[in-house]
Image 1: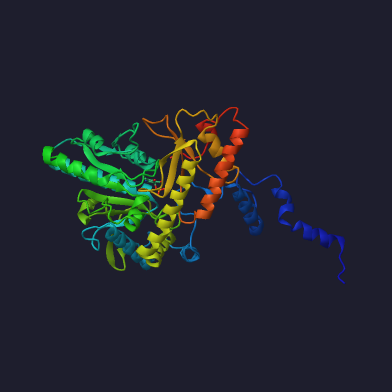
Image 2 (image 1 turned 45 degrees about the horizontal axis):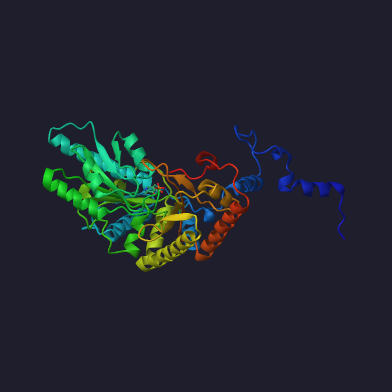
Length: 463
Ligand SMILES: Cc1ncc(COP(=O)(O)O)c(C=O)c1O
């Protein structure tokens, strides 16, 4: 039998992670600690702090991937040390990026997909900046060649994601954002044409509006711009923000014309890390033809003794996301993407039907014809005492993040709630959410809300 002396027992206890004295006051917040510390303990403390983050799988606010195949995780792990910018050092990663660009150009019906140009980015925001820069530069060159002023560029769009506001502010472009109206929450051709002039660098249409999940009518807008050109000579290019839709429509609705089949569409951005199903940190921008990207935005880098064109706002960037994206393309193919997305659409339609049936809600978007998601508001004139902010707050008690938010101008009076159905949001999970919403409504009936939360108090999703 082992003999235990008192000191040995104490040593053992002191080795317990949670019995360390110098972390008993909490972890450093403002200053570097003076000394080094044990990795095992520090890992555990950081790990524990992260328990306070929400559970990403229950975050129905995000469009981004929250479920990954083990093989994608393994590739991410294998690429943790690869820098996307070192084309010479990691030529095969560069090669996979190039393949993705051309496969996307083909998926989006570029007339010369094998030769057109595009690149990976950190997401749709960076992709939007690059596409916006190209639009501005093309317009400026044309104006200069005509001897016309170039001080007042403008860009026309509908209710866009914040990245386009950033683009406009950072690159000194006036954003002519068509406001929402009663009965119209997205862009239409009539409103676009009204705002076009000789200083319009382009029109952005969104395939999958962030606020409501709806697709904007690309073909109709392009046709109206064709008429405008015939009548006035103004020839205005289009860019499609396909952050979500560019990875949905080609697989589930291949006959919908929104892409390079329309000649006026000169560039497209998409988020690989949304419905492209890649891990967080990858987006894409592709131009219809190589000549649609002004030459002076390109930087040439040496790659296997060859010079290849690059375009990016940043320099170093991890390579794993691009590699995992390529893995998805070859592992899933069109069939796999279609199956995964169709399952999401079915789940979204199921949730929409359930929500409609609950009584107090009006479904604004029911998961059909746009992004797989649902968007609803409270029926007008109903005295519920609770608001969607109260509902969002109560759902958090079960771990669900279902944002409630007010719409942008001119519908700030309209408060909606929205869920996104991504890969991994199964029908089973959807049915649990539905049950929890019903449970919340029962609770509000038996315990009427004395004072509703405001948008600010409810916190949550901001675009
Ligand atoms: C329509 C649209 N454009 C752009 C973005 C920005 O995308 P990312 O998060 O990939 O930068 C989003 C994000 O939700 C979006 O919905």
